[in-house]
Length: 448
Image 1 (tube, rainbow, N blue to C red):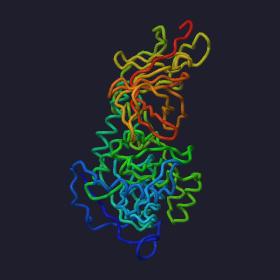
Image 2: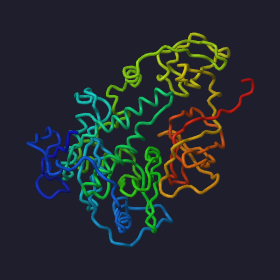
Image 3: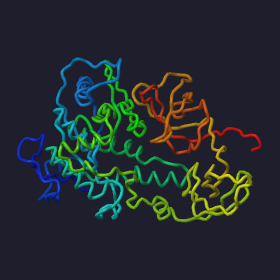
Image 4: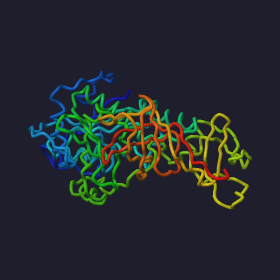
């Protein structure tokens, strides 16, 4: 594993000495490893001291500035925390790190080198985790006036995120790599290493809020601005991970334009950097090409609900439930209406298509539930659910079958629900937990 690369020890606004470096100047070259370079890679579980939750309660109050009504904080004086700020090279994580430092915490910036794809190291590469992102994160840390390192977690990322992504598609499921990265990398590999090095919390630029109750228990809530809320991709975090999570942007009732204005006021040149919407480990944005190169091609049939052959494909993994475009079906539907992917069968390499009404799902079974804070009560309960990172809410009734399986029924049918996706349950703004969709039940249609 390549280890920690220190930044030049200059200080900018918010630091202790010197002027802010020129953000347009290339990052400096470094003669050797910094003071953390000898830190062990293998870490052991960390046991929290009894006083930790209450100290963290006030730290979150200091950084976030407010909490949801009815969830009072303690009146203990906040203490200065050692915070490891994950800096992607984008505007959100840079502003989050700056806010944490401004709140008085001892902040160190770290950029995660996650990509093993040579294209990621080329100038102008798409996605995140590129060499340019690393330079951008370093320059932001210089301006903020905090130490900065690059940690190589590419091997762990490949095993836990990329390989999982490929295996899920090969099995006919639709994964969410960003959610898996939060679960396995940012709040597992990174967090474990941070705790082993004596840090108290990991700070990211996610839009979500951690609320701590007077009894010390933690809750994950939606961001104050629902338009920017990212609690869905954090729904996999458990109580231990939440205890060390810091989201300084969670209570931000501002537009993205105002976040960029704040970055500009702070002298962060990433203020105008576009957001990344690509899968970070697919540098050219070609998901189909990425899958084909690694999984190969295997011709199979595209059939209708009655089993009639309508066309062929080069790999069932190239389709997702609800897909309409790119089917290349030579036979029009009898009713002349568009057809959508209804089912993907990796066993016989068959893709089934049909009318949009056939996508209506009334219930599902989900596996591997993870709870954020308090677990749900026994028996069926009503929640709202979110099925996609940018999807809306829908009312559901959910009940645990056992510790490994969750049964969910929808008040109204929903469409485009795919095995492999995460379902995140909410009680108001509070994230109850998440689970991975295993199977779905479709609404029975007349004449189908």
